[in-house]
Amino acid sequence: MASRITSGAMPVAVLAIAATAVVSNSALAQATPPAFTMGWTVGNADTITYDWTQFGTLNGNGDWSVPGNEAIWSGWNYTGTLVGDGGAWQFDWNTVFNVGEGVAAGVGAFVTANIVVTNNDIVNQSFSLLMTLPTGFLGTMLERGSIVGTITDLTFDDATVFAPAGGQIYTPLIDGVDEVPGFLMGEGFSESAGGPLFSNSVGPADFGIPTPIAASQPVDSSIGILLSFDLTAGDSASFTAIFEVLPVPAPAGLPILAAAGLLAGRKRRRRR
Image (cartoon, rainbow, N blue to C red; front, side, top):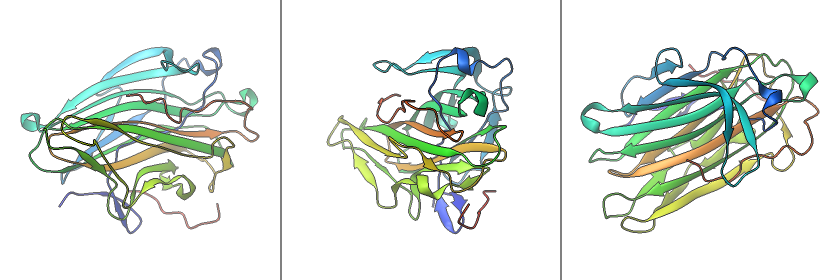
């Protein structure tokens, strides 16, 4: 049985991304990249943690635009590929992250990522990725987020992506703690390609859109996203997900990527 990164008593696998503010490129300029990390798990294997100094390519501080969308993120672009033993799976990522400029500039912290996972195994598999971004924000923040994906059959027998039992595909995190108001695509959610060699959209789903909501816990050290899914044998899934934290009050009119199609009142439960 596939292992999960747990969320309290609930088992949860992971594919992840972190937080996002959409503003002008000049407002988000950073001279030094933050200590961004990425934890990757497949099935029963131990979680392996990477940062941009150890694996992948840090492409520098530049612009990354979304085709068909006027929004532009400016930050550190981190890309890479992981391949399992014997080519049993492949994981490709392209993410942009930036801690923002704080309340004075009205800019939140963000990570936005394009993730593609292919299960080349002969059995269904669970895949996990956790992306964590340290941030200097302190106190209460506003939040919003979204996720959209694609499921593709590569084996002439249809394909399905599933939410994990007892969990959800999309889990935003603040200081390593589940941010429950942002749970999306919960237990029982699934989407199929629709037929042999078909491809189909997954979602979109969102929260805090168009009006950001108050985060249930203060931001002290980091933000992150935990995305979790099981994928049928021989097939491929991709996700673009965003979790955004914004200073209070949030800047008006900031767009959020809900469907671009790219690649304090509760007990705190801390991930380990």
